[in-house]
Length: 114
Image (cartoon, rainbow, N blue to C red):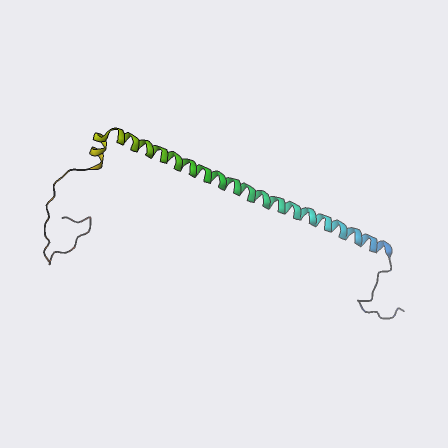
C-alpha cells in the first residue's frame, strides 16, 4: 500500500498527463489573449467612432456659427448702406398714457383684463 501523502507533495507520475495539461493550459492562454485583443480592438473602435463623430459635430456647429455670423455681418452692412431702412426697423412709434393704480386694485397677470 501507498503511504498517505499530503496534497502539496503529490506529484503526477505520468509525464504524458503533465505534457497534456501544459498543452491545454497553453491553448487556453492563447485563446484568452486573442479574446482580450478582440475586446480591446472593439472598444478602441467604438471610442474612435465616437471621437470622430464628436469632431464632426463640433465642426458642424462651428460652420453654422460662422455662417450665421456672416449673415449678421451682411445684414448690418446692408443697414449701414441704407440708413432710412434701419431707422424704420429699429424704432416703433406710438403714444402711451400713464395711469396711476389705486392701492386696492388687485395685481393682474399677463392674461387678465387691463
